[in-house]
Length: 402
Ligand code: TTP
Ligand code: MG
Image (cartoon, rainbow, N blue to C red; front, side, top):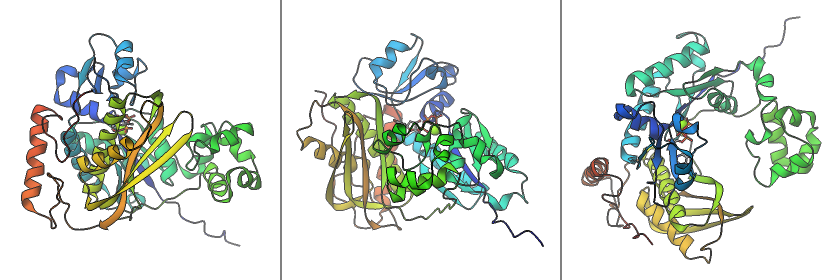
């Protein structure tokens, strides 16, 4: 009797640029290449590291670390630069454009990350490793940056694979190797495991995904709840979402940071929220989302999590409006001085998912897509690029220090 047909496995590619902001700076300033470089707050100021070059990571410095702590670890020749978001957003757009020449099915998930469905490319281009190499080469050719690529049968495997050989990595996980690939990884990399559920599995003696696979489905359902239990059971066996949809309607767009050490300095919290607003705003504008509801998320030491939402009169995708709403939600609570573990913001409550995106310089939005507003945005971006991110702000003005 012939074998029953096995379902065809998809080929999903995840791409993530290496040390993104820092790499753009090193690309644009050749004298900074090969040196430890930090993008973020200035030394002597309060604030955090947005990211740093791989040369700086050797000293144990990473994103969201307070700048003062980074300075203590890094050698004197380290370069410190303030972020130029408009420049990074432009490079991001160019990279996404390159990816669209590889496959029509590209889903952008953050400023430097995207998923591609490359299932149809094997007969045209070659085996997965050739497809991955081609993606990396095209990005390098177009924007002069390195990226790490992971390829696997679904989003989970592709994402984990892109991370294992960073920077400039290329990792292909064929379906038959998924089990071995996952087994030694900490179970916390699985989706749906949060601060509440992780300790429950730890109490069962679970450390790795291999350990999770030893547990019967019933045990997982008991300890994690029915939905998460089954989700974790499946993921531990390498089964996960393999759909890539460029136009996937999103319920919300959000960005958050977990600090390596609790932060109670309001300047650091403010700066982190500003960054989150810029990232959320940039993704919302590029995916043509305008939202009315801004949500602040905050977690205090150790796991006390709160969300607060505000509905805006005018839907927006504007960085300053997002930041302003979230910061006012923070200020309205008696939270000042408490040690914060995590902070972030999100936008939802869409009013339009197509058409143009307005700019709200004076917090009054243009009702229709408007070329003047687009020109204004471009001018503001050019000024910021030339004179720094603080040179000019849209919407809310920056609070004076202290
Ligand atoms: P990541 O892709 O998380 O980090 P990265 O590209 O700098 O480094 P790698 O992928 O090689 O590990 O984030 C992309 C950019 O987002 C990053 O360059 C800077 C910004 N970012 C922040 O500003 N603050 C943060 O806390 C994080 C995580 C990222
Ligand atoms: Mg990256």
